[in-house]
Length: 275
Image 1 (tube, rainbow, N blue to C red):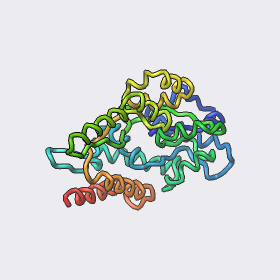
Image 2 (image 1 turned 90 degrees about the vertical axis):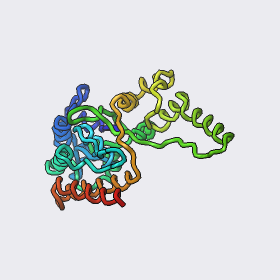
Image 3 (image 1 turned 120 degrees about the vertical axis):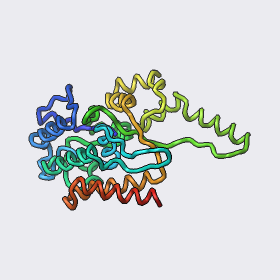
Image 4 (image 1 turned 180 degrees about the horizontal axis):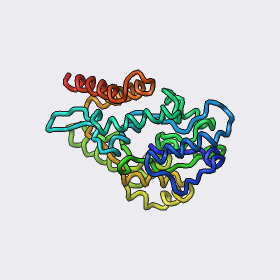
């Protein structure tokens, strides 16, 4: 994910992002200023911050606060996101709601608000870089993702797996994997989609350097490779994301306290894992 901002809103609010906020608490104050002083549309439905993919940002924030999301002991996997450090993250998320910087339960509409000029900051996929850059009417920038104790961004994606036992098919499949994973193809893929490449060496290619020079948002996204992180993958990952989204929705709507919401999600996830 990347933290995007609307340049017109930031300019109207008189905010200087040459020295962007580093921590989430610093970011909260900047977002509040943008909301108070940067309303360029005049709508009452104007906000400082929102996010499109709640579970991904929440997991990023967990790791930034020294929470591992899950615990792995041998073959035993159990939820860890509801410990004290996880609750601290949930409490901060609730603070964004309580201080009316982020709207309650409108994440599915966050991108539309942002593109309409009704949202100052948006945490969203890096894939939007290439799409939005093609529209000359969109004046959008990006800053490094804020953090709690240390910078970190959750990294995810797809994998290339060879399943056949036939030697000829395996060899052909391996050649395809090498082709797809080459620095040239990975760089082309990244520049055309905005997704992060899996090879840092590709960033030294002329086309990558040119893209970063022409569009600083690529630099923001690519630099996050140095602080990217991924938790242990397991069968019920998709269920975990759904439960985290439900937990966040519950705390946003004050249906449950942050701790109770995470405890409920952890209990239900453990039941799914145990089968």
